[in-house]
Each structure stands twice: as C-alpha cells, then as structure tokens.
Image 1 (cartoon, rainbow, N blue to C red):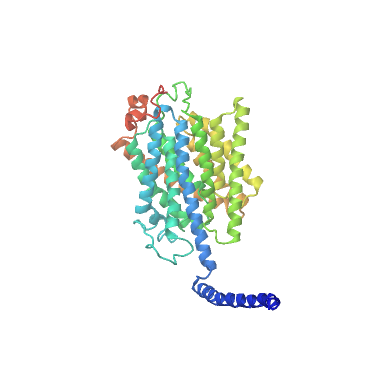
Image 2: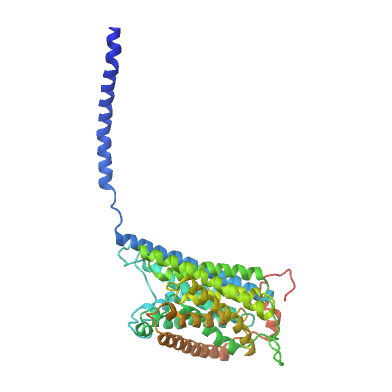
Length: 448
C-alpha cells in the first residue's frame, strides 16, 4: 500500500494541479480578452503627427520665450550699472505687452484673411474650447504661442539700442504699436500668405521679418532720440561707456544661442515624419555652425584690427551669425553655413565703428547684429536655395525696411512732440534706475 501510494501520489497531484491551473486560467484568459477589447486602438498616423507637430510648437515656443531672458541679461551686462534695473524692467514689460497685443489684434492681423494682400483682420484671436479635437495638423493654441514669442523678440531688439536715455512709458507705447500693428503687418506679407509670399520672397525663420524689422525700428528711434550725453565729442572723439558686467552679457548670449534652436528649428512647422525630423536636425546643426563662424570671424578680425580680442564683438559675432542663418537654415551645406555666419561676424566688427562715425548711439550693437546681419542673411538665401531669386529677396528687404523705418519714425516723432521720449540730462546722469524705476541694481557699488 505504501509502495502504491508512493508511485500514484505524484500523478494524482499533478492532475489536480493541472485542473486547478486550468480553472484559474479560464477567467484569466477571459479577463485579458475583455481588457484587449476595451483597450483603445493605437493612434493613427494623423493623430501621431498632430501630437508631434504640437509638441514642436510648444517646445520651440518656450525656447524662444527663454530668449527674453537672454536679451535681458545681454542688455543688463552691456549697460552701465546705474541703468541695469531699467533694462530688466523694460524686458519683462515688453514681453508682457507683446503677449497681450498679439492676442488683442496682432495674430489675426498677421494671419487671418490676408489672402495675398497687405494685412489681415484686426480682431482678438480665439482658439477652440477645451477638449476640442480635429483642429488640423497641430493645436491652434500652440501655433499662437509660438508666433507670439517671435513677436516679443522684435521688441527686445529695440530695447537695447535705445538704452540709458529713453523714458519708460513712451518706449512701452511704441512697443505696443510695434507688436500689435507694425510687426504683424509686415509678417502678413510673407508668413500670412500676403503679397510678398505670392511674389516668391523667402525668409524661413525671420532674418528680415523679425530681426530687421526690430533693427529698422531701433534705427529710427536712435536717430530721433539722439546719443547718450557725452558719447560723442565735438571733435569726433568717441567716449567709451563700458557695460556693467561681461559675465551677464556672456550668459545672455548663451541663452539666446540656446533659444535660437527653437527659433529656427521649430520654424520647420512640422515634426510628423522622418523627413521633418531629419530637416530639423540639419537646421540645428547649421544654426550652431553659423554662430561658431560668427564668433571666430569676429575674434580674428578684432585681433588683426585692434591687436586685442574684444569680448563684446565676439558675443555679437555669435548673434550676428545666428541672425544671418535664420533666413535659410535648412538648405546650406555645413561649410556654407559657417561662411554665412562668419560674414555676419565681419559685418558687426565693421558696422559698430561705422555707426559711431554717424553718431548713431546703439548701446548693445543691435543694429549691426539684427538689422545689417538680417539683411545679409535674407539676401544670400538664393546662394544655397536656387529656387529663390535675388531680385525678389531685395524686393522683400527694401519694402519691409522702408515701411518699418518710415512708420516707426513717424511714431517716434509723434511721441517726441507729445509725451516726450528722452530723459532729462539730470535723469540721464543719475541713471534710469533711480530716475524711473526707483530700485538700483547694485546699490552697494558706486554708479558708473
């Protein structure tokens, strides 16, 4: 009996175990089948493209928004210590005003019902309600956000040029008009499918539409506002007015450099395919190479001309390289991108003293960087993109330049004759921090 049980017990136990597993397995398999039936289907190709396109706008948008910090730090470093708080205030104020104005009127003026014309419909913009689907190839709100931060960049360019002597509120009034009306109108000509777009003009991410527009507005303001007290002597001598912190200026430049990957990369406007991803990668690489070319060219040239390397020229060389490649960052070969950026750096080195000869006081060098390098970058597009025409590029550069410079000049003159745009000589000597902000950036140090 004992021997029999020793031979039969394992078999019986195995059969019982198999039966038990089967009993448990039936409801388990049934549960899995139910879960599989209830599980959502995989996203379609269109849904996947929508998600990635929207993500591109959002990531690109917050990178470009971060450029506002870059402009603030660059300007804070290049102005004298008694004007640092004023520049910080101007930059956060202009970003906020741009955001409001672009919603109130700017976006619709730039993109709604342009239809080959000169501007769209001036009205507040709205996006679908929460939970809405089928918005198209990307979220409408993500597109608005991405376009808005570009608008704010344009105003930042004006801020640095006119630093240390312009009054706060007239500057902000001009900012509201620039971001709500002027920038959207010229932007509609190309990006809003306006008349320049139909003519064949090309400006991929805004060498002219963003940077030169800001540069033209800054140039008009600098001429009408006049130079800082003591900058230019009667004998033509230029008095250096060193900035407060090269560390802050360098930090600002690196922040701008980082933000530019969103500026140029997300201007691809799509990340829904392998081709889009490849193109964005190429844009990143060319953008970086152009900035490097601008830095090295500026360093070599200042060493040759002045026997020393000027750090401010190197910083602006990077920015000029970035502006130069912005009109066409996709098509150039790596070597071509470097050359385009290097020419931007050369432009800065020659243009800064040229402005001083004309007694145009540009505190941070924004006119050479954004206006002149923007013109260069837009003009040279056909060199790497044979589908474009030099004649059409010149048409776009001139038409946008004339419109922006003339209208900006009229606005500055109106502000000058009504509310006044310039601080008094006493306020300028005191510093705009104490004159208008009431908070010194460096109260423990002697103002300089």
